[in-house]
Length: 131
Image (cartoon, rainbow, N blue to C red):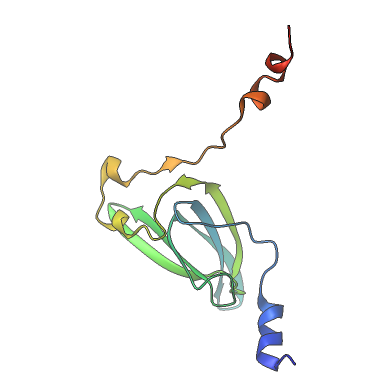
């Protein structure tokens, strides 16, 4: 038997969110309500942490540099105030939490892009045919 809290949580979970992982550069579109108007504010940065799994409590920490000062924000993924989360770039990282980026400057703060590896048959299918 499912209680009311679990039923409510299933309704609130956003379907179809793209897979977000640490190292990705994302644009988070957040709804901001000012008096009687509502607008969308975009926050673009690198995901340095993802916490609490895929459930209703899942959050991502996004970091960006503004005028030489690092700014971090924690976004609940399934919050109704988030319009959408777009993945701009995928970063190749070997850590689950990228807290070392807080102290890194310049080239050390860069992340490599994640690339898909093609096999030889995908690149040149005619080479596998016998001559």
